[in-house]
Structures are given as structure tokens and as C-alpha cells.
Amino acid sequence: MSKIKFPSAQTILILIAAMVALLTWIIPSGKFDTLAYDKEANTFTIKSEESSKVIKATQESLNQLQIKIPLEKFTNGDIWKPINIPNTYKEVKANPQGMAAFIMSPIKGIIQAADIIFLVLFIGGLIGIVNTTGAFEGGISWLSVALEGREFLLIIMVTLLIAVGGTTFGLAEETIAFFPILIPIFIAAKYDALVGVAAIFVGSAVGSMASTINPFSVIIASDAAGINWTTGIYGRFLMFGVCTTICIIYIIRYAQKVKKDPSKSIIYDQKKEIESMFPMLNTSNKVVLTSNLKLVLMVFSLCFIVMIYGVSMLDWWFAEMTATFFVGAVIIGIIVNMNETKLIDTFVKGAGELLGVAIIIGIARGVTILMEDGLISDTLLYYSSNVTEGMNKGLFVNVMTFIYAGLSFFIPSSSGMAVLTMPIMSPLADGVGVGREVVVNAYQYGLGLFYFISPTGLILASLAIVKVGFNKWLKFIMPLVIILTLVTMLFMTISVYI
Image: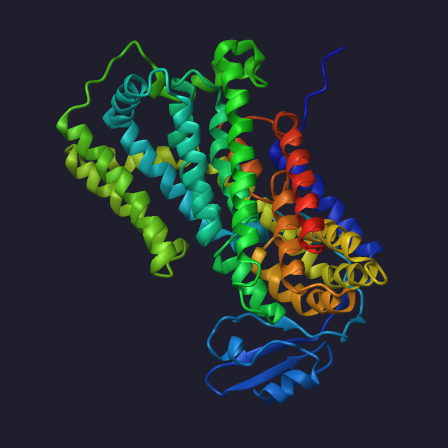
């Protein structure tokens, strides 16, 4: 009897989409009224299922709607998305997602996720061009000599730098660019591909989980809760330091174990297959790092530096990031004197290498579309907000964390989760006698903990780059998730009693 094989990332997401479609037939449809600010007219628009009306944008208007958010949070642009209005939930006409909606969801998801999909494809094109130059082989050879005996520094540097990006400006989707480049470097350092995936993905996940000044999570959530985003910031810095240190130690321990005995690798059975995916690991053809190749690597590295600067300082998003990698590919083609036909063919072939990853991202977005169209997210939020009634402080903060972890499956966007839930959830803290920053923390940590294993997040796309199964990732990451969960519960409990 043949061994049952764990399903692929695409199949897992299709099964999740089927489950979500089924839930839209079981869970009642419901909606909160929403409030949106019009900067040009200086008015609020209240939308419900039945009607829409415009009112003056004043603090009195917000108070009448029981929205305890300062008016300036709207007028200065801190809150730019429509927010849910407390105590307005009502059941609406059901919109169950049938077979047609289920079949169309991956297609709609791919169309809706076109921005990040094009980013991934253009990164693949750039990598394809750099691969043909031999610059990667030369760079890896140089790095293996420079870090000999100190390869663990690579884990510390990569995880820490990406975690800093996560905690400051929400470095997440952009990390897709790093996997095809950094993973062969980790393999060359005698680790396995899982160490490379972990250093990048865990760095991003723990940084986003313990956000300190991230405008897409802690700042927008604090604004939507009606408090200053600096409230509770010292505790968040402490959590960032503790959790990042735990993650780095965890990855290093696994990495050292694999380096000492490769058979201890969770993906040992895929070792040859994964190594064959990266031609730059072929040590039989030693490439000398010439001045020209150094220039290629410099331009390649500069693409990432420009991308990070643009996202964090210039309000860039996917279009600008994609353009950066496209320009980088053309410049590198010119440096190595690549003719037009070869440049285009190499770029297209490189993009094709990441097409499977791009499709996974689109299918995951399709799951989110089913949830939105099925009108069940607000229903789950409404009933979740009623669960904590009458709880003591310690139980309240921990239950709230797990509620947010559950809600993050249905509302995976951090900024979307903030504006939709904070006006509903943050007032619950007042009744329990704790600060609203506690609910902001619960939102961050709940969202962050689930992100480590969320199949609708980026992990399946990340694993697809090295064709590692989700079951093997769970085997690797679950002990770390349990440790971080216990640390979070301890921190949250202590925070409301000191």
C-alpha cells in the first residue's frame, strides 16, 4: 500500500475555500453599519444595508455614535478606511457562496492579488538574469569563506534585520523577494532550506506580531481604539526583544543540529531535490567574483535597499516595487552586455520559475473573497465581542488574544482587522477596568501568533519556493508557536495586574 501524501499548498487552499463556502451556509449573515470620512467635504458617511446618509464631521457626531475616537484621527488621515459603528450589528439577507462562487474564487483572487503577483513574477525575472551571470555562485563562494565557522551569524543577522523591518513598517509580502536569494546561502552554509525559510518568515512574523511603530497595525489599531499609539509602547519593545531572541535561539538550535547531522533535518528526504533547484550551489564550477560580477551583485542588492526605503519612507506599494526590480533587471543586462533577445527570454523564464508561488497567493486571496461575499465576518466579530462579558482582567486579556487569533483567519489583513474590530472590541476594556492598549496588544499578539501557521497568509507561498510541505513546516514551527503563546499569555496577564 502506497504511503498517503500530504496535499500540496494549492490543494490545501482549495479545501479551505470549500470549508469557508460551506460556513456561509451555516453562519448567519450580518453587518455592522460603517462610518467613512470624506476629507474634501469634511463629512462622515454612514452606510448600512438599507441606506446611506451624510453627517457633519464633528466630535459630537462621533460621541452620538458611541465612537470614542478623537476627530483629528480622521481629519489628519490616521484612519483612512471605513470603521464599524458599535451597537449597529444586524442580521442581513443571507448570501451563501455556492458552487459557482467557489469555482470562481481562485480566479477572482488571482485578479485581485495581481499587484503582488506581478511583484513576485518580476522578482523571478530579475533572479533569472542574475543567475545567468554567475554572480550568485561567486557571491556564495565568497560568503562561505568569510563566514566559515561563524555561519550562525547569518541566522542572527537575517532574522533580526527582517524582524526590525516587521516591527517598524510591517515588512511582510516584500520578504517573498528574499527567499530565492537567501535560501541557497543557508544551504551553502551546511544548513537545510528550512533554516532559510525560518530566518526570513519567522523574522517577519515575530516583528509584525510585536509591532512597536508599525503604521499598518499598532498605530492604526491605537487610532481606531481612540488612544495614542505610544500608550503601552515600552511593553511592546520588551515583547519584541524577548520574542525575537526566543525565535533566533530556536532557529539556531535546529540549524546546529542539522549541521552536525544532516539526517536530523525535517526535510532530509528532499535534500538532493532542493539543492538541485539552485544551480548556484554547484561547487564543481568555481566562479571568480570579478569586478563586473561585484557590480551585478551591488545593483541587485540596491534593488532591495531602494524597495525598503521606498516602502518605509516614500509610501511606495507594489507598482513601485515591481518597477524597481524591472529597472534592476535591465541595468544588470546592460552591465553583462546581454542582447535584447536573451534578456527577454531569460527574464520570462525566471518569472516562470515563480509562477506557482504567484498562483498560490491568488488562491489564498480567493478564500478571503469568499468570506467577504458570504457576509459572515461581522457575525463572528459580533458574537466574539459578547464572549468576554463578566470576565476578570486576567482571563479577559487572554481570551481576547485567542479571539483575535481566530478572527485573523477570517480577516487576515492587519489594517482591515484594526479598523473593523477596534471600535467594537476596545470599549470592552473599559468595562473590565483595563486600558484600551491591552486590546490593541491582544489584537497584535493574536494576529501574530496565528500568522506563523496561517494557510491563508504567506507561509504556503514561501514554502512553495523550495517545495516543502505544510505538514513539515508545522512539525518545525509548532514547538516555537507554543513557547511564544505561553510567553504572550504570561506577558498579557502580568500587564493588567502591575
